Length: 191
Image 1 (spheres, rainbow, N blue to C red):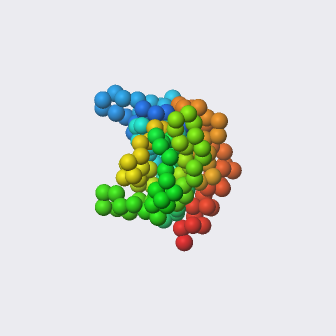
Image 2 (cartoon, rainbow, N blue to C red; image 1 turned 90 degrees about the vertical axis):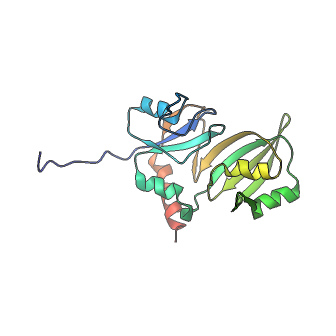
Image 3 (cartoon, one colour; image 1 turned 180 degrees about the horizontal axis):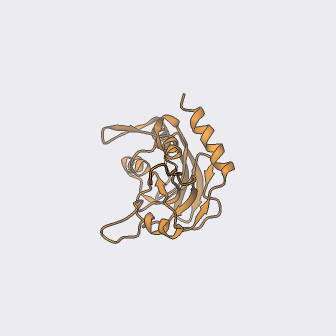
């Protein structure tokens, strides 16, 4: 087969609404539901960009484009990740300020780039939180540090890409316009 040209697969991009209770892995030896179960239904070789913990839900990007994934994930690009968070109590002004200035958690300083109160839903208090640097379970760790219990956590956007009208478990192709908008944003902020 010498001289045979091998062409890489064309780049693929999808938006996935990861449901709560689903692991952000391709397979689980214990048989628990995972992102790989949903990806297999696509019949394409793609992988998740980043993670959401098992108890969180919301936007995950799926792709076969490693360069795109690196631009989304690497902290130097400062791509915003937007979350909606439901808590068991209202944060005080001082607590909101501490979260945006930074709290020491497990030897690291964690902070939110933005935090805005959105209102109430029943007994829950709803906040919009923007992260520019994603650390493992960062929002949960910040809230735990303040003695606040998270009732629900959903990622709603990564850069300019949003969940839109997707329901939990749904996957939709990502159009080039939205990808193109995110790529320059990531590249421009890296310098």
